[in-house]
Length: 452
Image (tube, rainbow, N blue to C red):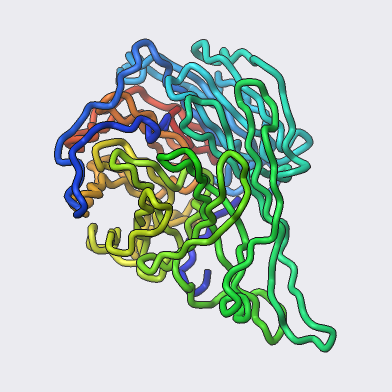
């Protein structure tokens, strides 16, 4: 899918479950101490690559499928090593770019196929190095509930559960005389037992906004990126909002958001959907193909916005499952850019996050037509951000990126322009220092979408 970076008015292995003890207070200066995240000895680093579509393919579209290849940490860190994922990798079942997950220790890999005849099928693999991924357990399809193009993530509950979400195409409702009532789709939330490859629960419902919002045509177009709260009793689900022109019944591409919104449901029952609204962010909270919300050390959930009128924000949802409108983090303000767009990001511990983003004025790729991506180290406590010193390129496209490996203070990322060779880079989460690792061999039109 070609992503167009539109202005608002036009349109880990993560360890966020590892709740680390740090000092905190009621103000924004939380996490003054640091605790080193766990180090997994002997873990694999799995590199994922997306293949350009074969029919009318556009470089960087990822519509030709996904391949994965795993190496040891030692090899991943070695700049003298070469990894040829596209020649030697394991082809993941998926017609288009797969939505991938890995266990917290990197020894198990999870996938739900995206599109095609097997779209919606969940599968699990034991990582054995190189192209060796051994299927384990059963295969279960969630397509009838979450479509053949499911949007899902795993919860950080010891790799037990995945959650998929879906909204059917919104339907415009009017009275018999044609007076507009509202626009709604049917939302489905599904929990998946990843240990036994079983659907644990599924609930479907229409999720209403306020009467005033619905009367203006506002509605939920998409759900994505659920996250489990600290108490383990609520899921927070991101939303992508749209608006119907109430006079014509058509989609209204230019509109003013009424604040960033999330859906909160009871867990594990998946019942009682309610909506919470931020007055800090005015964009969507659904992300794209990666996690977009994380449970942090301080017990709060941090969530990024996209298509935000004031550039992307990172919002805070406290343990009472409400937005903290006193916490204001603007990526524009922190970096000194305009109309920033957080493409994907990862909380890496101790109040620090790695953010992949673009912004107004970024070079546009002549190859893919996309705006260039960058990576910044963000300090959520200090509300600062600094661009990481990396070999950037106008063809660097990170919108479809999915995987960061966090191992101690090391954050592994794959970085290469579309169709060009690149490297694994290891970023120190505390200092932002960068170490160049193994070489990644690319092919025309292809790109790398993560380390797991």
